[in-house]
Length: 449
Image 1 (cartoon, rainbow, N blue to C red):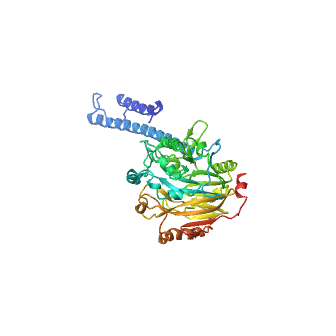
Image 2 (tube, rainbow, N blue to C red):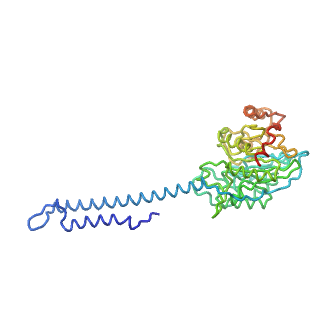
Image 3 (cartoon, rainbow, N blue to C red):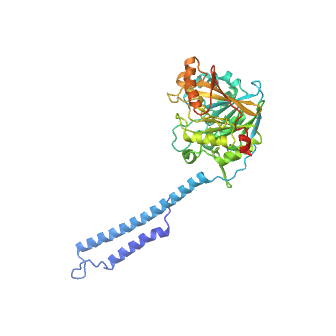
């Protein structure tokens, strides 16, 4: 809204008075006078044109000044808003992590299975309506049950809200609350919420999600009604040790300014959202969580859809390890990506999809699970589990690939690309294994001090 002040209007009024007075008093010196003191018709018409032209020019100049002032004001507000969401990062008092005791299921030690992008919705709905909410998980139920705990990236809010994000967004998803009991029954104990769809139905969608998950007995990490809640973290107490989990989303400009996805706490109010990955916050969170956990996994939503590992992923993944993470788990690309062994710590760049209900890219074939095997409080090995996730093949029901040809198609590029990053994957049947040595033994504890 443009507000005209007296100073904006005054110049145009002054111009109008000057031109009107000049005409009325006969001050137009170029005018010709006919006998009797009367101005000729032709001269009078010319004087009128001059007066009208001066008035119009004055009005245009005034309007230009008003528009320029309004534009300057909008620009200042916009720059201030960008600076606010980009640079404001006050200290936040983060509460202690959620702690959950996990009963042993896998014998000695413990196995925590991480799964990729999960959203029973969208194009999967005709099958779900026909066969029930448990359908997308039915072919992997036994796989999930073989691990002490399962953590998946929940890639959509659980809500019945009909108010999506108001600005144009290509992909907008939501999951019906009726899916929650079946997600839990499938064997998923906890979900990561730090992703770019958690704000698809605004803050109400996120609040609904938190409520439905808590009601359904599913733990969550990476989002909250405040930044403090989003960064809180989760600790799973298992027979192999205490595993801490933190979850963040890469700090991309369109996620920060366009979809306003990140939680933020200030002295005067809090904004709900997901946890933003920043070095200072990550270091603080790792230090805090280390007091309650023997090993810490950092989950990050990063990279680009259907693209190889980006340089930014490499920088951020290694920074997570440098700051004290024992392992890094990535998602967002919808395709599985290589594993890197950096300073003796695994960085799984992307798990790809799990039960994701869209048609997806036609070239995409596989996702994967990554199980962290804990022994005496440390990540001793990583188990790689191939998953066939191309919905044109599996009909929205992911499963372990069948046949040597499919397994070779999965493992071939993964083993080669991971070896180039220092991670040796040993294939045993339909599984891959990465043994984690004791190198940089003091890394985590030293970084967290």
